[in-house]
Image (cartoon, rainbow, N blue to C red; front, side, top):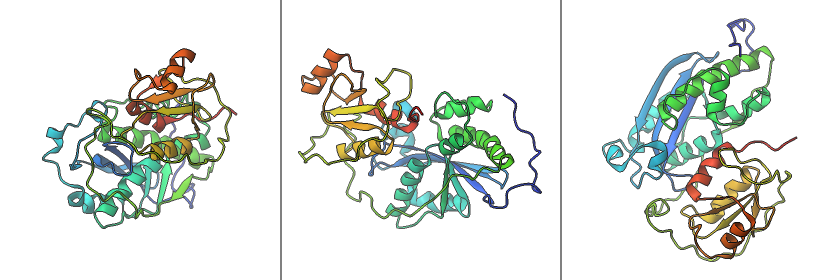
Length: 324
């Protein structure tokens, strides 16, 4: 692949494009509304995507750090880190007046906005740009929408995946040629409004027993009618490949993230929540695959792939678009 040069100069740069960007990555204790940030990094870029500076901090989440096997940050490492209110002002200075850029930007924005809400503040962000959406606008020939695939397309080398500082660096380096490609073709950037969030779980966080030990008991609730999935079922999930929009996902047993929230995120990703397991079910999510529930028994008899909640929440971050 040929890297872009600097033919797109200030004289030809689209006037409607933002005047600066804050490329952000946060690592968290999980994906639920009451989960917390454990590390954050920001690369500030100018109007043409050139790096101005960068910043990184650990954050004490005041709770279990969650999937240590993913982000590598243990309770001991985070014990002496600042609390979010202590870094909020510096974080704001890095974000102020810029478009927030992230890979799966909705997730990063929601986590950041909730941290600010807990601190009785509002993040100074008015717009966000998702690099997944931008890569789709540019029709980049990517095998999937993982950050590592975007990085490889532009020849950017990842050194420490799921380290906030390195992920932000990688994204900043991949965003600049993406931005230049968009400018050369006068592509409208997929900017979305960032509205401050005022709802968050203010009650004391429960131990993350979903990651360490058993699983909390969930109370019965009536099933909620959801809109039909707009995408056809592409078939079963395959190991080491991304989920694809339209896949039918079933859940069995207790989960550490509220089941309804997990199902909401599933629907938002373009997947179908299946209430039972059948031969056309793409994936079963359960933290107890050896249980004798009807869903796990059927999954075994049909050969339906099974993953646990932690693996599933990571897969949700990189769902491939439906086949056209």
